[in-house]
Image 1: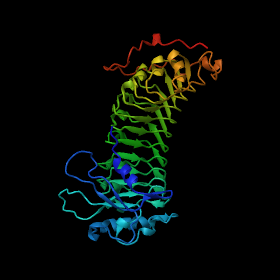
Image 2: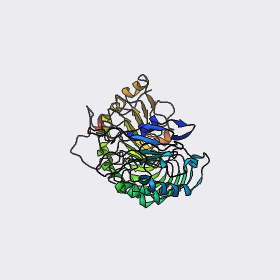
Image 3: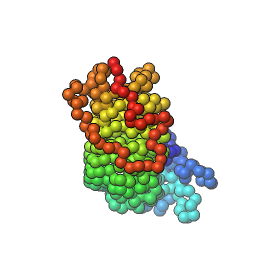
Image 4: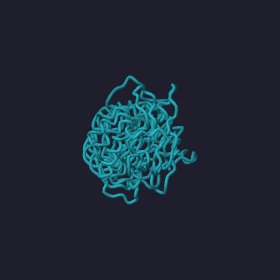
Length: 414
């Protein structure tokens, strides 16, 4: 999937930074309608980020008066500003505020003239405070980046009125409470990043029904089972790592959007099988299932992951023999199966070392290999009777010339 977040990327490329503070200064050239298509829209001019004293061309005080009121209300809710970021937030010219970027609206028939607040980027500003409901009047804002601050509290329900918002980055703060469901009511949101906060509780099913290209919610306190409609998500990147999710991986996981590139489940409390159809994503590049309690044999369909570069299955309770077809994956750069109960692997796996592929098979039950479990630990294999073929499928589950489980390679010899 072509990355949808080019707006922020381009903005950060054209705006210089000062020290470790992540907002720019001066005038930068942004993008037009952001959809990458044709039509008559030209590039917008991004104005702001700390232009001191000068009104920008086309500045109309009346068009930004509500933005002034909202930003001053937010300024009042910020209790600590050690980098003195907000010292420029004085006067009605909000386009001169540090971290606030304006753009001339496209001709859309609305009759609106003059610049509007199109983005706020206060990354790494180390601000302490809360978000305020008044910010919801910034209905032309397409990005809100607040990573690396000390904001607390929750996301105001009024944020549902941020009709133009495409990117919301609240990562690396101290937000808390349940999953901010108001983010699912923002009609144009495509990038959601709330990692490294203190959100807790279950995540809503609608998270995976929304047209998001990136779902980044790792390093919170989310718990409960993953919603059964996980496979509905059209996202190219999903990061669920370092939470407290439990139960089985939903079987819909095996039939997700074929444009999915990365999905991370690591360091949760997931159990059961890896769904049999996991190999149906021919574009998958990173799959990390490590540090859970998954059991059973690997699905043969993993051999379909022709674009996979990183496959991490470490620290689970997986067993059986590692198929040569898995080790033959053409794009693999790192294959980690350490701390499981695998009983062997074939010749193609041995060749990984000559292919300069990172291959870690330590602490398993492979006879004749170094750094394996002591034999008593291998006498009883966890989940030995587990049946992982839970849902039949009309689609072929085996790529290439994968044989039946009986044709798996025998345990490797020293």
